Amino acid sequence: MPAEPPYSGLTPDAALDALASAGFAGDGRLLALNSYENRVYQVWLETEARPNSPASVVAKFYRPARWTDAQILEEHAFTLELVEREIPVVAPLAAGGKTLHAFGGFRFAVYPRRGGRTPELEDRRTLEWMGRFIGRIHAVGATRAFVDRPALDIESFGREARDWLLAHDFIPTDLLEAWKSAAALALAGVAHCYERAGEVRTLRLHGDCHASNVLWTDEGPHFVDFDDCRTGPTIQDLWMLLSGDRASMTRQLADVLAGYEDFHDFDPRELHLLEALRTLRLIHYSAWLARRWDDPAFPAAFPWFNTQRYWQDRILELKEQIALMEEEPIRA
Image 1 (spheres, rainbow, N blue to C red):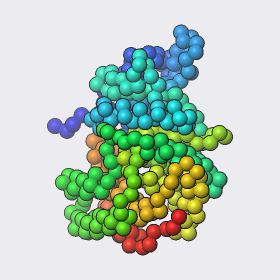
Image 2: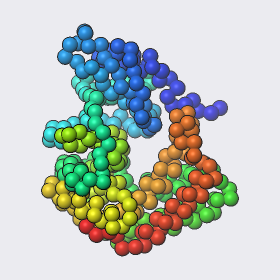
Image 3: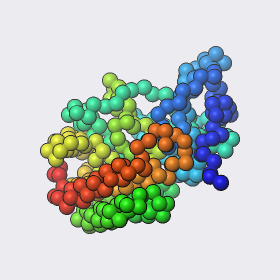
Image 4: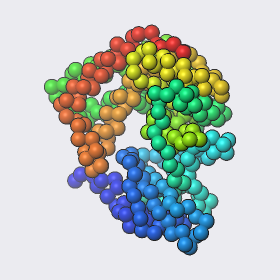
């Protein structure tokens, strides 16, 4: 029999009951927010009984079996450490002395609601501001190591993801050899990039540092969703801010580093890893979609996945990355 969908038991009533069990009594209004890995809701609270309570909170229900309790609590501890240093990130609220709660077979955390808009990464001043912000995060991230959170490396993001896709027959038969060949050459290119970079420092990272995880206000940026925080090289939290052709990325990198290096040193050898990390993300993303295909939210949200055209495009994409990894990296 097929496995039961991971969130089949998380009804609106169950979500409200879970919040109430942690002391956040909802008034019955609940809005699903844009999230696929976890289930995230804005929940309006009964404010009459608690005059000083916020009007609404954001509840994140963790995907079952993805992280251990220790890994989730380490994520929470990192964000709380950043808040203590007055770095504007959104950290979980404590209730009953805990930030991680359980109810009805689900684990969840409750966050303050923060508004904002997507940052305008075309603006040079915005990029420099983002660089300062990430530099402050990394200055804290470098002070100690994760114990339970995983590392971002070739094995977990590349080889393991490739092997999982092959073992579960997601690649169409007529494209199988072409994809296997492209993936093998791409991973060899990644390994070569790591060899050229040499021993680079790793630290605690946000891990998924793209524009959608940043809320911008007139006071500047604040990061949300540290769900993918892990150990890795500095450049992992910088390269997703860059886009366009080589000249554009070179200018954008200069703007980011102008702010970043006010708070944390950047090792230019890590630029050898920029296209390598992009390649790993591409392979990992395909495996991430495939592993979640039993969740009804994924076929509905990603109808283009696992089509003939999808895998043809991925083969071409990997070939482009192979060529890019053979070039000299952009310069800081």
